[in-house]
Image (tube, rainbow, N blue to C red; front, side):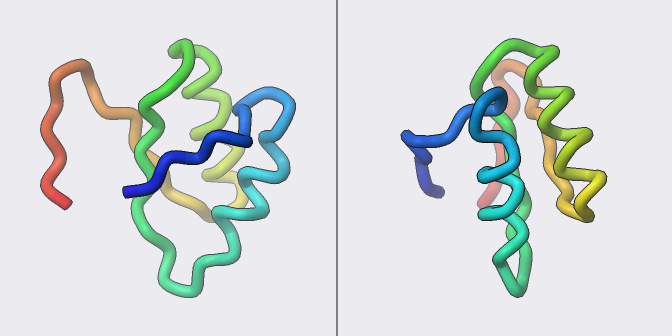
Length: 64
């Protein structure tokens, strides 16, 4: 797990997608920050680039 402090789903979206696309064995991405609409927009933008992401529900536990 890693926290990215310098990216934003708004201004840094293209950079974030570029960064996420550099992994050879792409990890699963979980979008856990921001408003629901922004999360959905980022998830859709990632999907357009072949990157899967999940928006966990409140209180959901994820085994890593």
